[in-house]
Image (cartoon, rainbow over all chains, first blue to last red; front, side):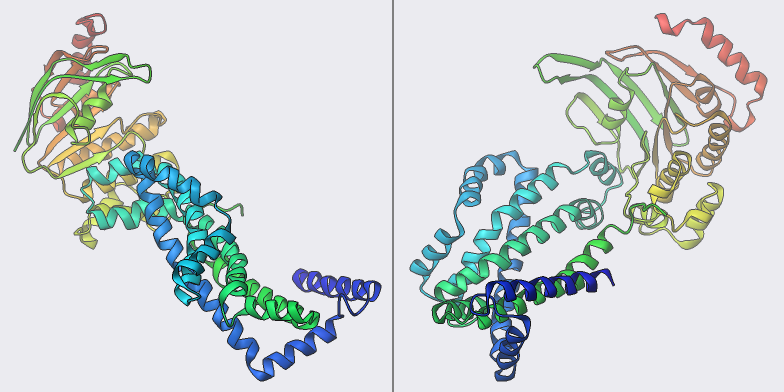
Length: 245
Length: 235
């Protein structure tokens, strides 16, 4: 209910702003909706959203898997940490644009280059978060697992993974928002489809309704994924914690 | 089945690089069916000794022989997995335990009602009992209890001591029980190892001839009185 009110407020603000600024710069909601419907009818909207989502899914999975593994190793092994730290600082502070442009130059304007570039942008934040998680692992529980001769797989699944879960969730949350932002830049610069590509086209033609239609559809998809996937996942992870009645 | 302990020394280096000797020479053996009690002042290195005997710390001088040990351990803090229920905590340590055995254990320890609770929902006394259930569920041949009765009120500690006595008597194994309560030591132990202050060494071994189950209150009072006369605290 509160969400609906908040949404209505957003539409109202937009509408009033468009009346004040003028249609040319900020078209009112019905015009944008019409553009959205046209794109949806031709199927272009879904093709582009689908392409972007596929890139997000691939790059996100790749970066999370690699980043978690590297972060865990760096948190557990001082040698790995000393070796990896300079690389990590470099990657953390490397602008996304540099990675994307270099990837396109070295690997060509390919899908692999785009996904790799997005993944490399997200990787260091996952590493940093998981490294902190691995450092915070409770040695007392490790000792318990050793004393009771837990095999490695059982220790990992029941002792280590639950302790890392909040860190994985944090890395996923911040990483997903980062990937949402970067994927459009990568598409704008070197892909023939996707939301980023369409926004680039709309920008060149100064087609503001089309630009907004794509931006908002994209935002809607992000919102749906956050509420249906990310938030239930986080709730499930913390179900053992005591909640105030 | 016998535990042979021949530790010649154990030291830590603190952050400033200074060496601290925690254990001096500690030699004893423990046989199956025997309850050894490690008794000593707080901070004398009892927990360090236990870690070595449990095989959690290999960084010491000397030798500990523990052939084919199946260890059950009750740590000073319960050390349960907060994200697993009481039953899951026990079953993870003892995957082969059957339902009858687990039900019997929970029954003795009065945990039946808490089977599906998470450790965060339990009091310290209950969590301790879960840790006990876990240690007994693995059907150990070597049981280590690190101050399982500390920071419980007298009534609760008394009841838990009874439960521990019942469980220890139900199985032939080597048991090592750490405490700084002389009453618990005399009631539960067969042989009492008295440790000095740091660096810890064994200053006295008291062997109690009377069987654990047959000790009268009078026997216990006599043994305590004799031990008090030895003035072990100042040796």
